[in-house]
Length: 314
Image 1 (tube, rainbow, N blue to C red):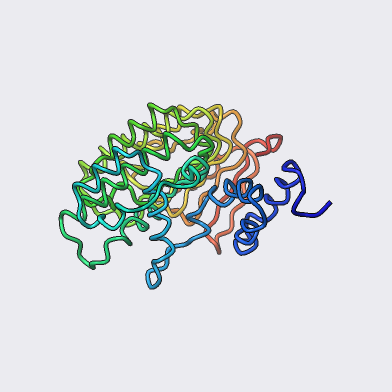
Image 2 (cartoon, rainbow, N blue to C red; image 1 turned 90 degrees about the horizontal axis):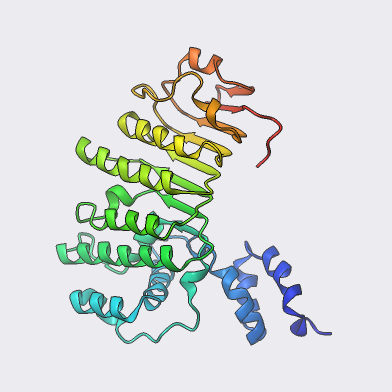
């Protein structure tokens, strides 16, 4: 038996082993039609990681947006092409060979935004181009939420402040997540470089809490650079995840103005295995001394890890 004629059930563990070897995976596409059909889902699990954003050479990430654009419904494509001339070169693209959006497992909003933005080369896009980017983002995001059956990780690193036209479509996107009852295993939420009004902080925070509260299988959450009102909103939303959550990570967060993280806060999480505070500030000695279980502190790296239940493993 040649390698080329191996049955499908033997190919899966082989391709699983190659998931971080992009060059070898692309070579496997050319072996046979069977290999091509089998490996495509592996290649398109997390294409944003396989094709990182490069400001100097945006061609690959532009191609990624182009491919996903062809996966939109004909009505959605027609509407976008009719409204925005900047997308005109996409009008002659053929329908995709595979439904690539169905295989996605990790959805990073900031890289998705960059892949769309790379299609608009002007340093300062016109108002029409900015609106086009926002509506393309909305269309693609909703497509992923609807079609990606194995979507496990949602990274909200830029959605609240990168959407150019005043948070356009954000509430509709949140609605799509809740309507489809997407069951994310991990959420990554970042408030990095936020320069918006308190009113929008509260509005976006409530939308964030809606995502957190609606999840049914959430095991891990990472909160990056949260603080103040936003932090309290997120901490209160976690009360809906006291059974499923196993890991909570706070990265560069400030608890100085947070009123929700009190002594005993983590006791209600019955399956919580690990909590990390990475380079955070505003944690009082009284709070740290109240943490249950094993606590490890490294002041050099400004890391605090505690494991409230050593019998639970992720």
